Length: 282
DNA sequence: CTTACGGCCTGTACGC
DNA sequence: TGCGTACAGGCCGTAA
Image 1 (cartoon, rainbow, N blue to C red):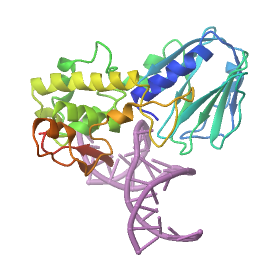
Image 2 (image 1 turned 90 degrees about the vertical axis):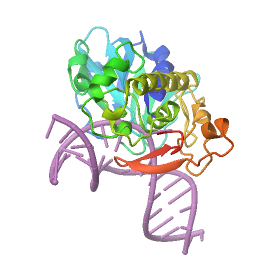
Image 3 (image 1 turned 180 degrees about the vertical axis):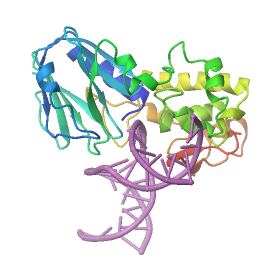
Image 4 (image 1 turned 135 degrees about the horizontal axis):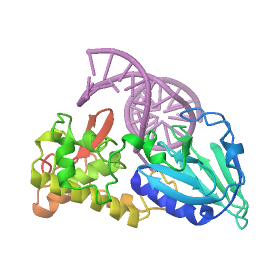
């Protein structure tokens, strides 16, 4: 579930159940996900009132009001969140690794089959300055992300543009799907060296990273392999993919401007699948 | 410093 | 049906 739009959707979904509420218990059903879980966090956080639930990059931050001990959740590749309330009480499922209970009777279940996800303690006051947040690039939907910024960030990069925009030090939140989609919208070949993009291409790319992410958020994210949002509903941005997971099918963008459409190609870059149209992305 | 690659895990889809 | 293989939304450590 997890690129920026999906994480944003989760945050919006759980915020009404957590913000201003008091934590009853944080329960670990295992000691490790990607990393060992912070052992003393459950005791430190019990009874604390939650001031804020935030998203930074692909991380969900839970920040209490009266203590400097907060935590983040990262969904990894396969992490999901379910909300259970007194109206729809918690029913355990396989791979429910972490539960967060509030005094109001809500249970937030963190389910992650592959266990690439994570939960770690962060200081409420200056989480910004602590890893992994301290080395992150700007939020793509903020005013700090614009063509001039991207120009200086990519100036010396010989790396291909696609892995470059997935580098969280350059810009956060862009994962494999939205990198492919943004490059397609921009007519940029994903294998081009990042430093080779001219000003016009950079302006275009910035705008299209923003538009594809914003549209995906507006659609409730993308639902792949039939998984659901926190509230049980389905995101539907996957129906708007132009290239992602469409290898061998005719490019709709080509088709619009010409009768002869090229097929979408699939290549591998930095160990990840890239989908693009070799004709309209140059 | 930069970039490329393998590994972490389980589930699912597909070919034989 | 059953088995083996490839691949999946992310990130990190190591090596070149």
